[in-house]
Amino acid sequence: MSLVLSPTTIKVVSFLAPTLSLTTSASILGYTFFISPLIISTTSDSASKGLAQLRPFFEGGKYIFPPSSVICTALWSVLAYSSPLHRTAYSIAAAGAFGILPFTSLYMIPVTNNKLLDLDDAAKRGDVTVDAKKEQVQALMETFGKQNLVRGGMFLVGGLVGLWSLLG
Figure 1 (tube, rainbow, N blue to C red):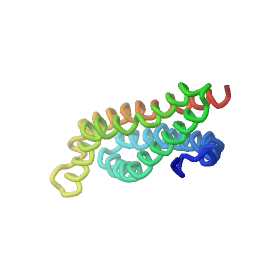
Figure 2: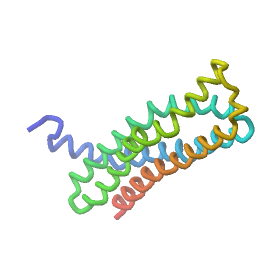
Figure 3: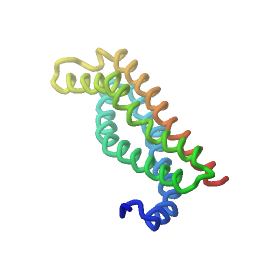
């Protein structure tokens, strides 16, 4: 038997998993649902200002979202393994946490994020004036906002189903 999956390890993780998974889910939801709309709203004033604020959001997010998603997925999966009565619900919670990874890497980054970063890079080099492309930037930012809400919704569903299972 593997040391990682010993009965003692599973008991300890099962004890800590509810608090850690809900805290991680809540922090990602706050980052997604509250910070993102603030950045997007600055684009209506100045496209260059909105893009300048979006880059740190992207840079910080790539170090926060993927590891948090993996941690939440692992925690919900341990709970699914250790709680046969709530296995389906915890599996749905794990899927909600894991779902942001393929959605982000296969859809958001190529469709929207890279285009926004390319516009920001072009503006920094002086190749293009971002304010002249304000409509394009605003459209991409609106698309990013909608995609970010979908991504946050995956975490929200997972967190709510997990919470419901914990309380039930």
